[in-house]
Length: 263
Image (cartoon, rainbow, N blue to C red):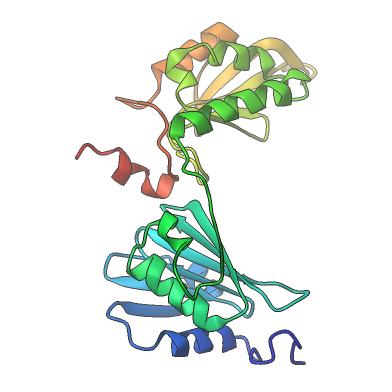
């Protein structure tokens, strides 16, 4: 059955086909695959010589080695929403009812690498919302502040360690997050996070499996590193941080190595 808001989208590949038509000829190679195909085949990935064009019936992603646009279709009306990112960090959002404007946005954002501030004054791309520039240290600080209230109620039994970690300079510069019952550290500010820093969990009694208050075990992935009170656990984490571990970078793990290498 045809959706009244999108009468032109009659089959799964309609959105992709129509956008390819609107794009016309481009200098860069366009590799068009379904999301399922890209998941099943790890070799399907963006690179410097081409643009990866992934699609389903209602969603599309344009992606090269640095930038991407993720397009969604509203269900209650005709509206295409385009999420524009650079190094997987959201930079702007564009809304339009015309596929021609989506195609034009693709050329501006992905191919021509227009600055996000210039999107606001660009013509024929719909309604534009440009996000304020982010600073890595502010993102890190906000995350540490967030976890004060999140952990203070004691439901994860991590608050004692958190209080020590936040005043430990080597740890305070990293991006904190929790995963299940672990307190973790990342060298980048956005998911997916780096996985090369130790993580901490409350130690449980072997007898009754109850948490031992204020006592923690430290791991690096599956490797056990040691245990002790909050102060000792923080020392162990610092001891096993990656060499030359500096402040968290404003990026995801995907781009961390490229952005952290000295130029």
